[in-house]
Length: 200
Image 1 (cartoon, rainbow, N blue to C red):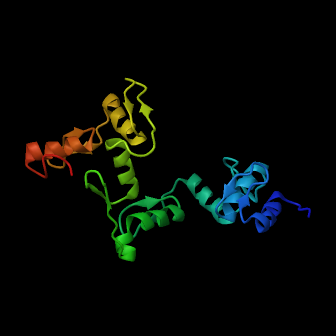
Image 2 (image 1 turned 180 degrees about the vertical axis):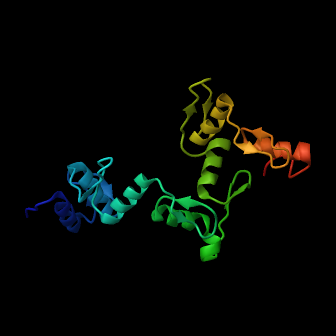
Image 3 (image 1 turned 90 degrees about the vertical axis):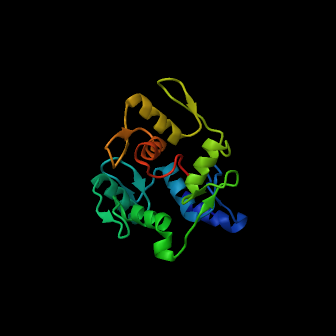
């Protein structure tokens, strides 16, 4: 059989192999949409093209979401907190991951199997496992100023504040600013008697 497009060929090929696979590079996908986007990117055939940056899309909804990013206007506000977002898709993701208890009556707690510390988000637990217990992806990041090596990108961002002098965390009692959250918590306990001597 002969097909006019690679996408039609790939969809037909699924009938034989039960796999969504790119005919050009043989990369496999779990869902047909991902495969179709991949093939479109390979062929540079798009239904919609951004007039600002030239990025292409095969779906109108994705194209509209992309154009909202160029507007740089946070017009979608969460009804459960004060956060705002550029696109409705970002707002929906925020609500799904941050307000499970309010929306679905689901309260998730992710606990570390090594030290029993608990986290509200799975990504926070993963970062904790990687940086504290050295579990997970073996990635390292090096500071371009002093060459110190840390285990993840977040740790590098926090470390760089020591060089830039950025003090992101401010004491609400006396106004003193500090570069790290744990420094602030230690300050609150030692200077103002608030909280614990070490973060939990």
